[in-house]
View 1 (cartoon, helix red, strand yellow):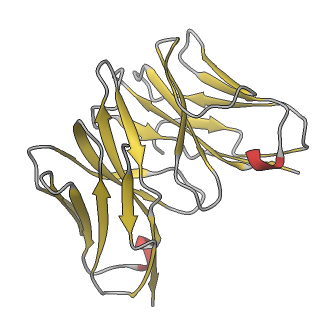
View 2 (cartoon, each protein chain N blue to C red):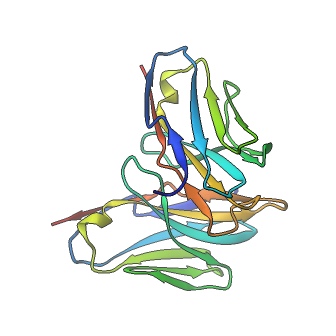
Length: 115
Length: 114
């Protein structure tokens, strides 16, 4: 167990729908990062939050949004889902603002399937 | 453009054999380089992390090397086991001022056969 908890582990939904993925960082970690990994693709950085504030944005679609709550858990909202959004979505956390320390830990991911 | 390229894309070896995976990067300025192991359908797990001044680091049967001059890294796996079958991802940390940004390679898929 890495200490980073992602729920749900699997999600199947129809095109056009909206889903919310949840991530609880390791205890003491203030930064949360979201990544998308499509089949046979590398990890693509989506967005980072640090202590409740958005700090960095990657290739995140406008249909996607995220937030980090006061208890530091984060949610990634995906709307108007398309078949191409099917992927593994990973959350990672670190204690620092940037992934400079050893404490950069990934969760086990949420597998999203859009049908 | 900041990029990380890994080779080979995939590799099949017999149990007990050694193998070496390669990573070339063009990331600048460079902060550190990490190797992750990702089992199918699971999150990546860190194997090693090296800063600019380090040129080798070991974690059990895994040994990573770094040549910051040529911007190359390798991951050597000794006496492979079936459980080593996974994707191995090279990740370079790009120092971008206030925060570091991670640049991911697409990974080398290793299959260890009995």
